[in-house]
Length: 240
Image (cartoon, rainbow, N blue to C red; front, side, top):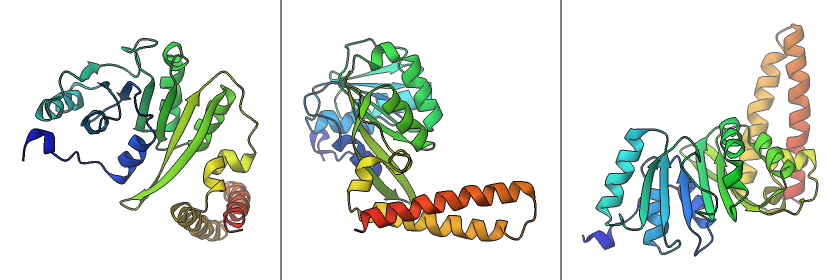
């Protein structure tokens, strides 16, 4: 197989990520790991050029090797960088941030705010504290236009498309912050299966806590009860 015919191996989650990148934009993958996302974007002519960035030398070296295998050294640059530290304002239009926890994602965006505000869009896939990320984005007037949920290897992932603009978005409800406004508007089977899984998991935990007569267990039970109520509200909304 010739180099230009080589298939770029992307998982469901990574395919969801690249689907949100606006064609023609210059992109930077922050925490690029193996480098397959920028390779795919350039190879499919979605972006004219890309920057693959990582804080660790090992992953960056692997990305560099893969870029060479596909013959894309002239179109994809690699940079050793802590978050967006080595990225300059106006240098790219899109950043991709995935595979990290929500608090670290917020920290990277905050630390690189001079770059963040110069972007056209962000594609984000936080691994945890997703509600916290949504609240941060809305508070800073970043517009979450769409979200996708992917089930891969038994784990649910959320991918967000975020437009960077100066207009303050409309306020979200607590339910929307928890589950995502666009996900609640879609009648998506993956999202519904997530809600059903969450309901089952939290109900089982509530029952176990019911056998423990401590103040902490009672507080957690009360919290779980509120979360289950929101879960049911979300299920009712998308099954209308």
